[in-house]
Image (cartoon, rainbow, N blue to C red):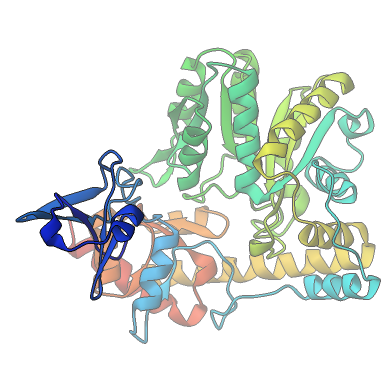
Length: 464
């Protein structure tokens, strides 16, 4: 279509065309080719008339003209803007990825050892079954629920390896859409930015329950309970098992009990997103306590897991979806349908990261080393959180209470800054963050805490 196509409007003897040339439908005039056609007009071809000869010019109109440009991802787009900034003090606090004190990506030593073991074993690269690596599924359910949990021994858990947390959530969303038609998912306000995308894409209706209280920069517990109570019976209540994203605000153990009470009374189904087990507090058991409490009550539970943060396997896309059912038969049927959903979606999951998880969790020595590294990572973030609070408190002479920074947990802190203030953080201070005021403390170093405190104080007090 790049070259011009000419069509003869009428031919007379004076055109001096040979019958052979006419029968072939072509006329070569220097570098220009004339084409004759009795076919119907192509809608993508425009005709221009030059006396007795009409020129038909091909138009580069795409069949995809109706597709609009999608907006940039609110989280991943931050990294692109950060890369384009040449300022020496710039900070990328947008993406939730762990960094060293030197602000470099960190590959866990235990992962390096597991990688080396896999290399020595010479494992093949054959397809996994649809449900994933059996050894991975076993250890991942045990890691979440506890190896001695009765529901595991009674085979009441359907576990399917998914494409990290996002893919596992998407499998669960498809299951809800297919087998719980009309059921609504309640998600916290605010929540991780991709939750809404996942349920929208799966055509699952959702609404929000109150969670964040801007006045206290804490949990709106009464609002949360009220909204869960008001939800239609049998709704799925999406809960962050630990280290709530984006706020870093978690219910207390006593509040978790009351949340479970209401969910049980309303016959709702708890749906956990577990993205930071062991990474939040440094303890695998402590970070899974909320899920285990619901299961101990005999409730059916859905739980998505990710190993991106706690093992640093971001690009390996390793996670799982677990459905705790009331009977082994129900679990078997649920697993069969999760596999049915996965088959036309991606067929089967990746093997390398799954083998790493299986080897680390399954080997006592590597498992101990992993726990030590998680404690180290969680400890570094806690130290950064403390230093940021100390810097804010010492530098801000207004008397504002910044203690909410210490009360939050995990890799994120919800600063309470609005969009205009976040824009000031970026435009003036070269601090890149999401526009809801969330910062990733995992991307902050002790050395940069005072600089960040200056930026936050300036943005909070001088930008409305």
